[in-house]
Amino acid sequence: MEINEQFPKIYLYRRIVQAKLFIDDHHPENIDLNNISGEAYFSKFHFIRLFKQAYGKTPHQYLMQVRIEHARLLLNQGMPVNKACYAVGFDSIHSFSSLFKRLVGCPPSVYQQNELKRQAEMKRVPLKFVPNCFAENNGWNKEPQFSITEV
Image (cartoon, rainbow, N blue to C red):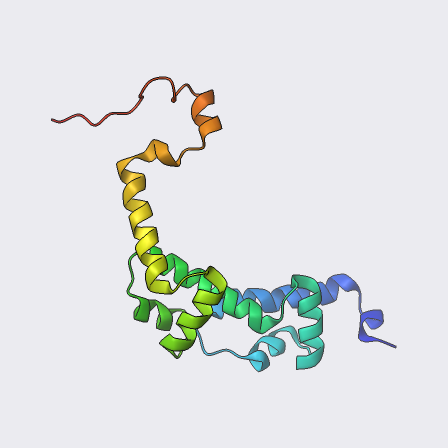
């Protein structure tokens, strides 16, 4: 008899979600599969299988994704790349940079430069970042609604 037949699916799902939330809350810490699977009270191999079934990726892949997403937020705020790397739980700038490039499509320093430029442009010309259909519905494309006035 398989373990899934012994327990209701909702019980198993709750334990997997508990482990996911553990990853979300503790991603900057030095956590590994033992910590995560222990949080769900499963053996490592059974946990990996159930987690992948539920989320479409292994716990390690999910942990790396969460770390990279948090690094993106820190880089958007102007935090230096090396500090963002360590703040989200990586031990090596090289491994962080290569994973970041693989998942995001560009190195963290290039990503940060592009994002900071985009943010500056957004402040300078906000209507450029409003979807055209929304601007047209509000009549913003007909006449300039916003202008900078000198005081």
